[in-house]
Length: 410
Image 1 (cartoon, helix red, strand yellow):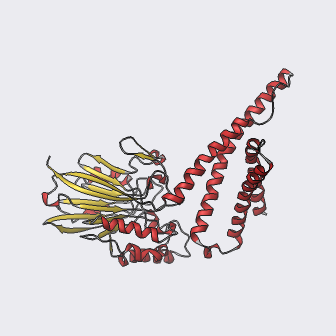
Image 2: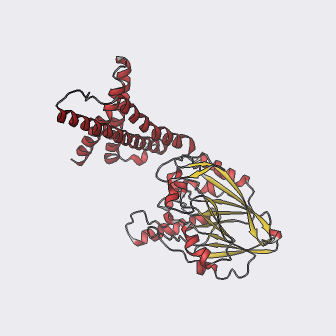
Image 3: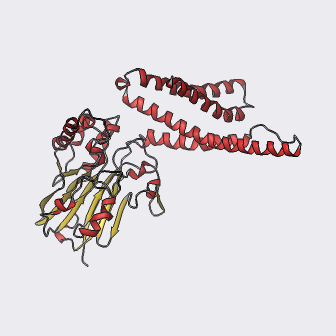
C-alpha cells in the first residue's frame, strides 16, 4: 500500500511537470512530440522500476557502477523537476490572480492558458542542475587535481627548508565504484616524491569492509619518511546499525588493522618524533575533534602533544577544521601547521584562482578549503580525494595537496 501511494505521488508530480513540456511542444510535429513524450515518461517508469527492484530484489549483486550512476541521475532529474515545479507554481499564482481580477471586474479578457515563456523558463531552470550535476558525475568523480602551496614557516630550521608534505583526506572508499581510476590518484601521489604523506581521516563511509578491494591500491603510497594517518568522523562506525557493541568494536579494530596493512602509521591521540636532516619533527595525530555538537569529539590534543618537547617543527593532523580555532590556536601555539579535511568543499562550488573561491559550505565552515593563517600558525583544509552522497564534483575537484615548507626569520 505504501509503495502504491508513493507511485501515485510520483505520477502526480510528473503530470504537473509535464504541463511545461506540452506547452513548449504544442507546435512541434507529431513525430517530435511522440519522441519527447516517450522520453519524458520513460523516466518515472524507470524510477518506479528501480524503487520496486530495491524493495523486492537483492540489488547488491547488480553492477555497482551502473546502478549508482542510474540512481544518481534519477535523483538529479527529480531535483531538476522540483525546480520546474517552483516556476510552474509561480505561473499558476499569476494565472489565479489574473482570473480573480477578471472575475471582480466582470470581464473575460485574460487568456487563462499557461504562459509559454514561463514554461520555457521552467525547463531552462531545471536543465541547469541536470547538465552540471550529471557532468560532475561523468567527468569529475576521479578527476584528481594537485594543489601546490609554499608555506613560509617562521624560524624553520634551514635544514628543513624545502620539506615536502603530501596530504590526502576523505577517501570514502565505500563510494568508489571503479578501481582503476583510484590507482591514478596513487600514481599522482607518488609522482610528487614526498618527504611525508599525511592522511587526515574518513577512510570509509561506515564500515571497515568498504576498504577490502582498495588495500592493494593505497598500500602503494610511498614517501621518504613514512605515511601517517588519523581517523575521521565516518571511521568509527557511528553511521551504521550494529547487532551489538562488540560488533561495532570489532569493525573499529578491523579499520585500524587496515591502516596498518597499508603500511600507514595511524595515530590515536599520539605523536611521532622523527629525525629529519638532524632536526626533530613531531607529527601529532588526534582522533576526531569537532567544535560542532553534530560530530563526535574523541580527540585529545593534550595527550597527543605531551612528549613533543622542543621539537623544531610540530605538525598536527586533525580531521575537522573547526578544531583549529576551537583549541589549537588558543592553547597550542607551538604547532606550526594543522592539516584537516572533512568539508569536501561541498563537492560543489566555483574556484578561479585570483578571482573567486565560493562554495555553499562556506556558510557552515569558516575554513573550508585551502590554506589559512592566524598569527604564526597555518591550517590547510584538503578538499577530499573521494566523494560522499552525490557521486561527483562540480567546480571543486578531488584533491592531492603538496605543501613545501620554506624557511624565513622573524
